[in-house]
Amino acid sequence: MKKLKLLTIILGIILITMVAFFGVYVQVQNRMEDKVKDYSYAMDLKGARNIRLSVDDTTDTVIKDAEGKEVSDAENLTDEELTEKGYTKEEVKKNSDEVLNEENYKKSKAIIEKRLQELGVDNYIVSLDEVSGDILIEIPENNNTDSVVSNMGTTGKFEIIDSETKEVLMDNNDIKRVRVMYGSNNTGTSTGTAVYMDIEFNKEGTEKLKNISNTYVQTNTTNNTNTTNETSTEETAENTEEETETKEITMQIDGEEIMTTSFDETIETGRLQLSVGSATTDQDTLNGYINQASSMAIILDNGNMPVAYTVASNEYILSDVTESELNIILYVMLAIVAIFLIILIVRYKSQGLISAFSYIGLASIFVLLLRYTNVVISIESIFGIAVILILNYIFVNKLLSKLKKEETVNKGIITNVFKETYKEFFIKIIPVCIAVITFCFIKWEPISSFGMVMFWGILLISLYNISITNLLVRINASKGGKK
Image 1: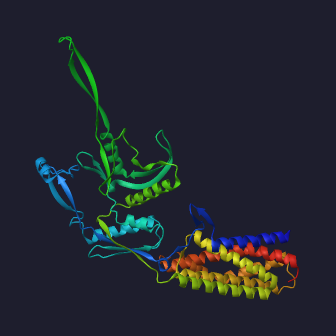
Image 2: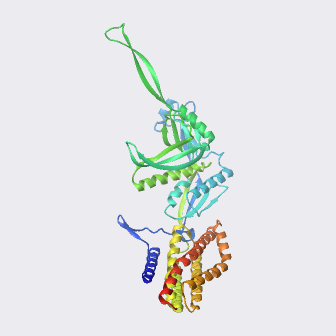
Image 3: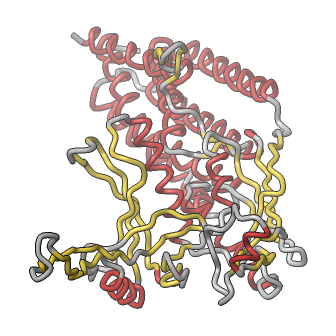
C-alpha cells in the first residue's frame, strides 16, 4: 500500500514536470496548440512597442448653410451646386490654437495612462514633450499590443446631438461611468448572447437624458381632409389620416455616428444601453464583441482627450537579450540543479533520491505558478527564480542532515525534525521576507517582478515541503526502517 502511494506521488510529480516544461498540446484546426499559459515577459526580455502620438495638424472641410449651420449631407455636391444652395466651405483645424497648450498636453497624457491601466497594461512608460505636445508610449510586446495601440490615438469625444439642428445635447461631462454587460437574447430575429455598453450618467446628465427622452419621441398627428363624393356635390365625407412625426437624436464618438434613434418613453434611470454587434452563439464572435465594447467603455470612462492625436510611429524594438542567451542561462541553471540533486542523492541515499523527486516537483509547480499568477518575468526575476531554487535546496539539505543524525526514523521524529528545520530556516529569512513584501509594492518593474517571484517562491517552499516532501520522507522511512 505504501509502495503504491509512493509510486502515485512520484508519477504525479513526473506528470506535472512534463506539463510545466513541455506543455499540453491539442489539435486546433490544422495546428497543434499548447494549452498551458505562456509566461508574461517584461520589456527587457520580450521587446517593446514604441508608439509616438503627434498632435493632429490636419483640417476638416465643413459645409455650412446661409445661417451658419453645419450641413452633413452635402459632401457630394459640386462647388456650383453648393453656391446655388447658398452653402459655403470652411477648413476647420482638428485642434484649434486655443487647445494647444501645456495644460491640455498633460491632461491627454494622464488620460492615456488611465487607459493603459484599465486595459491591463502593467508595465508602461509614457513621456511627454511639453513643447510639441508629442506623447511617447513604451509598452510590452504581446498578443494584445495592437489592440492597445488602436485605443491610444482615439480622442474619445462622446456627443448626443439633435439629428436635424446638430445641437449638442450631451457630452463626456455628463457621463458617470461606462460598463460592459451581456446576457441571453432570444427574440424572434436573433438568438444567443448579446453584448451591451451600459452608460450611466451623473446627476446633471440624468436630468438631461430625462428631458431629451421626453422630447425626442415618436408622436402621432391627425390630419383631417375633406373629399367630395363624385356622385353628389352636396355629400362630403371626412377622412382622417394619421401621420407619424419623429424627432431624433444622433450619438457620436469622435464625430462618427454610432446610432440615430428616438425614444419610446421617458428615461428616468439615467442609464443608456447600447448594443454592440448582434446576438450570437459563436464564442469567438462574442469575445470580439466583448473586447470591442470593453475598449470603447474604457475610452469613454476616462473622458475625452482635450487634444486630438494621430499615431505618428509604431515600432517594435527588439530586446537586447537574445533567445539563445536566454537558453544558455536556462541550461546553466538546469545543470547546476542537476549537480546539486546528484550530491543530495549521494549523501543521503534513498531519502536523498526521494527528496530530489520532491525538489523537481516543487520547481515544476513553481514555474506553473509564475505563469498563472501573471508574474512578469524580467532579468531580475530570473535571478529571483535562482534564489528560490537555492533556498529550497538549503531547506531540504538541512532537513536531511538532521534526519541523518537520528539513529532511527519514525513518524514522531520526522515531525519534530520538520518543526525544528522550519523554525530555524524561516527565522533566518525573516529579513528577506520583509524586503520581498516591500519589493512587491514598488512600481518599478525590475524590483516588483523580483519581489513577486520571491513572494510566490517562499510561500511555495513553506506549503509544499510541509505537505509533499514530508509525506514522501515519511513513506520512504516507514519502508526502510533505519536509514
